[in-house]
Length: 290
Image (cartoon, rainbow, N blue to C red; front, top):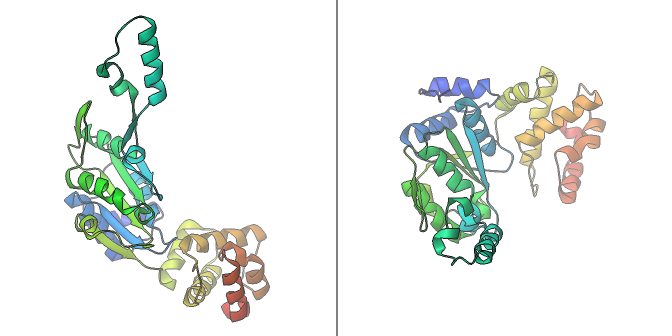
């Protein structure tokens, strides 16, 4: 299966797989794929950034390779590293037979451990459909961006002891950021950029129909309007779309078919995750969210 080659067909494909995209995002995805550029999406947590890569992999019938970024991430954990334990065992076995050990004996493919970036480039080099998700890049240190920059420029990785692995066609690359820090302009310049905001009430209702189809139209509307009010408050962590879906599913478990004040108060922990935010919502008044 291939990615649709028109914006309209791509939008239909995303919707078929349960992803309700606005037009701007669909166009950005289309341009990134057709131009062979990474898609860089920023936005608040829980607005569906990571889901883009998952859905694109499903549409294309491609393997999804995910690099989860974190503080201290370095090239050895993102690109490749050597299996030192296996190398040491090989050295001891060679020494036990009286053979001299050379670099070529232990620096070969057999002892190489491929990490997400190398895995994605290898698959692309073999023309195998691949979606590479570089998730929450803002969590990684700025130094890691220098490694990433080279790979995004050439889509190739050089392993001194083995050689260069180059993609024949670039993999589909999705980079996400929650904007806890600014990403360097040099990375953004190589990407198609899109900011994903919280959805409108109407689009959130559509999302609920796709992700929680058992939710009634009336309850979907109540949930979407309640979430809009929650996000308007000065919360430390405003709830995302993921929390809206969780809320709908939680209400289904309880058999609730309407969003009454007592139900809101009892299930508030599904959507609000900090004590201060819970207090702020209750001060605002859960009855105001009905």
